[in-house]
Amino acid sequence: MKRSIKIAVAAALALSGTSAFATNGDHLIGLGAKARGMGGVGIGMSHGAESALVNPAMITSVKGTEVSFGGTVFMPDVKTDMGANEGAYSSDADLSVIPEVSLAQNAGNGFSWGVGMWGTAGMGTDYRDATGTIANLKMVTNLQLMQFGVPLAYKTGGLSLGIAPVLQYGSLDINYDATQFGAGVSDTKGVAQDFGMGYNLGVAYEMEGLTVGASYKSAIDMEYKGQIKTATTEFNGVAGTAILSDHLEQPAEMGLGASYTMEGHTFAVDYKKIKWSDAKGYKDFGWDDQNVYIVGYQYAQNNWALRAGYNHSKSPIKEHNGATAQGALDNMFNLLGFPAMVEDHYTIGGTYAFNKMTSIDLAYVYVPEATERFSIAAFNGMNANVATTIETKHSQDALSVQVNFAF
Image (cartoon, rainbow, N blue to C red; front, side, top):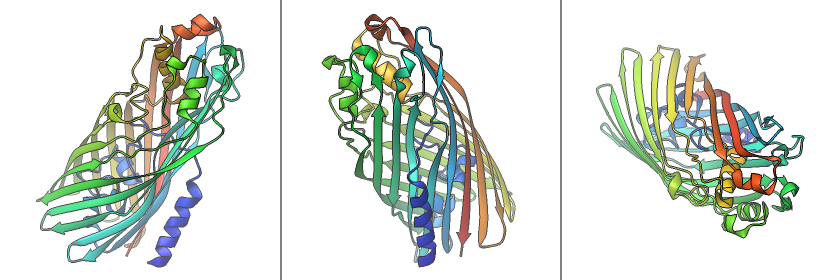
């Protein structure tokens, strides 16, 4: 047991320095290859140890001890055009690795516990090598979030209850060159980091092939000193456009889910609501709440399984009045630095068990291109080389690999 925990922790630490880019806003659509292969389903369906943060009540499905570790390779393709005659530039932040390490154990007498570290969210763009007069401001942004959780669950009859205290680590960096607006190079002074505390709650009930579940994730407040306030104040020197806070709160989230299994076939659905409009920082940039709809399917036999899924959530980013300095600032930062705008996700996946102890999971996520065009007319009034609109195109591919040990 101790050796398994050491391996899991080492794997997470080895990957945790890499950047992340996520999909429902800045959240991953699912934690773990099983869930991602089914569109992110997991509130009303157990995926063993990897269920810890989605619905902690679901870890009661683990019969003995299960260790799961792996990661997701994200390949976003983001292009933005904000120059009057320059065309679109591609972001160089086009490859990221997001880790996951989970452990769960049935402790007997209805109790289960676990521990794990997960890369849960993030986003960013990199235009440092763009050329031209505007050159997308040579903007570089990078938000990374990792959570450490200890899920605890109890099962009696068909009812399972779970809680997972969560420690979150986050880092944020915003850099740009706005000399063409008289603001100079950003003075954000490098990466800012913070820790925050929260909790996840879950409940599930099983009966004759049907499982229903509900989950709640608390908001987690983070403060990245010298980043958001400095970046927005310095951008054009107009104090009225500044966001006068460095807080960026990961929003509260609540959801319902259900799954039904019959003769190897499992059909599952999840619904989640992500409260961006109540979260510090995100509400300052005008993000809307997201309703996330997920459907998933699995066909499983003794030592293998195939999965497919679909995940849809409307973009939380909305257009503001770009004729005002405040509206142009919000539109520019949302699409140039934090384009969390993709909506549709198509997924496939599978599992192969080499023996009773060892198995491997794979999942592939395809996100078709989404396009947004917002007004930044106020900046065109300051510099005619800036277009009256900013346009961003964003698509994604992602591959998840996970190795599981059960004993």
